[in-house]
Image (cartoon, rainbow over all chains, first blue to last red; front, side):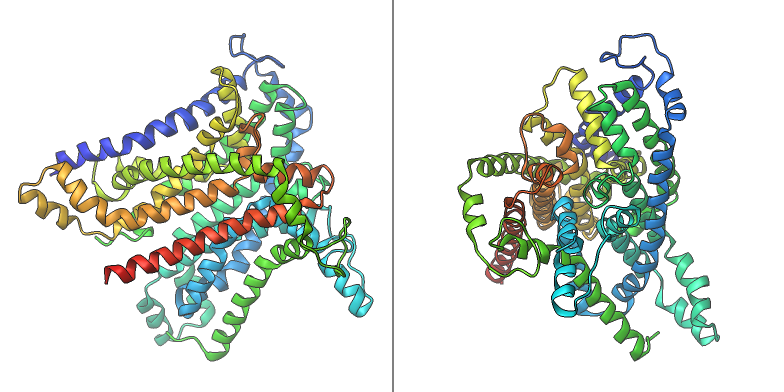
Length: 284
Length: 264
């Protein structure tokens, strides 16, 4: 049985492995090689140097990276705080409403993120939905909300909301009700139950949710372009500029590599600690 | 442990608030799309549907729809196939590299799509492929095929391997087991994975951005218009894109109900 499982497992994984080897691994290798090429070449047949990485420090690209990482971090923390009560409700409190919420939130995922962000521009702009009605009804104005740093964080929170909510709800659903009941019977305060039972036992969900939101937010582009009006140049924007207007592939590759390494290290350590089988509902 | 009534009340209200928050921007897009004036200001005084008419008649828009559709259909078919086998390796068989395989599949999902698109662009260039809608299919697959695998894997987890083992003990070949047991049991998962693959590909923007070359998809065109000056067609075309997704979902839901009632 074991030998057969080995054979079938290898065979059935092949299409996926091939797909990822050709269109995920290979591009990353090419980017890695390009990142150690001299400036502005378009072929990997050159003598390697590390000038592109030196540019990262000397030309101030690290500032954009810090901005991206900081905004990703802030939005992840806020996302965790606003998603936790809702995820708790979905996993433990709501009955039918959980299904309604799940469908409502999942439906937003199929709408292009740029359409949704554009919707926020229409909602928040001068003469937009909120400003327009505030003015007509109460004579109030809403101005200067768009095109700054905080609105980019707002956009990140909005776009990556499902990526925090669903893993959290999954994690909270894994907390055995007995453990919470026992703690309550023994006189634990709600805060203590949260701290000593809920948070540790839901940690796989917390890790996956936080990792997903952080990583995706750190590599986000559309939020700063549409909502932020490029008030802050995010790191992905620098990568794009280097590849397109700058026509400097080695620089773009080096910048991309730095982001990839940060994300790769984070993802590797977090994912390796998690049992995906139990999280996705293995019965055995 | 029962939560107090006040907590339940608060959480429900919070849930409703979140739904409002998530859909508010789409409400704005919808109202913008039926505003008559060329330059949009709220509150809208005169409504009209002529932007929709313009959008439907525009040859540019039909080209965009055609490109998006081509990409989405091919991505869907391949994602269903690759995902079906991938899900078996992921959830069903206990093989040597199962653990590693599970983690490798998650990686592309954890990857910022815009960066992935750029990496693919260099890769295509360095092997001499000219980016077009076909290369965008590959880009979409990197992200969507793993998601499709996970969706089918959830279904695969819930089926009892004893069924397959019993069939094997009775002398069925691997091929017969696949055809008679595995495929029928997983087919609902494969269909939902296909549906999701289609919708995710249809609405995808960051992966298409750098990989379609001279071709353009619907979300890409919308983005270009949003960044480089407003076009009154943007809200209506945006809503056509959303609306077609919703119609597809409704059709899928009705089809599922019909199949279920026929099966009874």
